[in-house]
Amino acid sequence: MKKDGHVHTPFCPHGTDDSFELYIETAIKKGFSAITFTEHAPLPEGFVDPTPDKDSAMPFSDIDRYLSILLDLKKQYKSDIDIHIGLEVDYINGFERETAQFLDKYGPFLDDSILSVHFLKLNGQYYCVDFDEHTFQKMAELSGGINHLYELYYATVLKGVVSDLGKYKPKRLGHITLIHKFQKLFQATFDEKPYIEQIFAEMNKRGMELDVNTSGLRKAFCGEIYPPEDIIQAAKKQSIPLVYGSDAHSAKDVGSDFPLFEKMV
Image 1 (cartoon, helix red, strand yellow):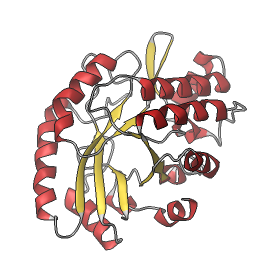
Image 2: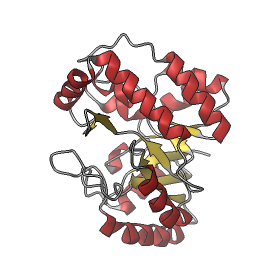
Image 3: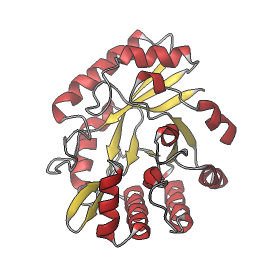
């Protein structure tokens, strides 16, 4: 089955206004038989979005409308493409209880979801690791260097994988190497392989899938897939299911670089 398992929507505050229908029609034209819409879930109650415009995720006020629209579209396009209703849920260290409460409420309406790490806690404050290169540099300084920031990121991803977020915890780990987003500007010598192996071992215990996310190829300071091929091959050796994701925030990017995914897996 040709599936794009990581697609955003007009409900994304930092995305485009492209309609659901445009995303769906693009997927159909590109020969996809399934698509999962994974809008950024509302951030947990009590968490303050650290980005300047506070536009990291869909507001709580939109979630019911988001689900309702997708239910209608599933029916409308059922003979053309399988539409899966999903969310990209943030794992935020310290907000496990609030995230579990959210999933307990909305999980029954979801077909498929992703668990990702975008926010890291440094000196009592949260920062968005993929916001921009200036924030990344500040985070590296606060953590004592690039290598320490990498270690904090992977430790947080591991915490997310082993965390108890209830029965509706997402089954797929998003862009495991998002920390590479600015690697052309800030080069690390951190050996991430032991962390990756540990993360994969814990994912295996829980039957989790890995998001193979091509959006890194579209980032000026990254230039590689999340994760790169050596980590994809390591996941294959561990028999971790690999799910292609464009991470499209505009309709034109649906299915982006899918042939590369096919070649690697």
